[in-house]
Length: 53
Image 1 (cartoon, rainbow, N blue to C red):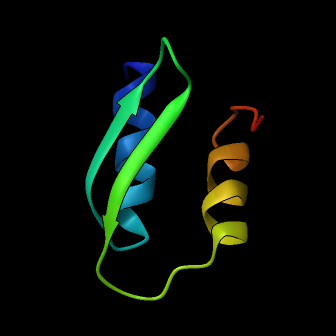
Image 2: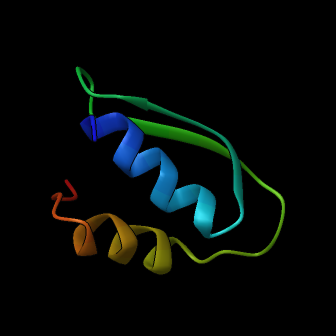
Image 3: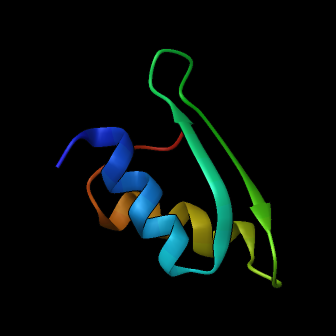
């Protein structure tokens, strides 16, 4: 699966909407429709094999 699609799919599973991943800038944007902690978002990205920062 393409990198941005993998990150997007993982974050959508958390309940985030309108997830957009910009690989060039390393920025992920989304609309949150429920309370999801930033720690959970970061850990989800790490768990699928990507780095934060």
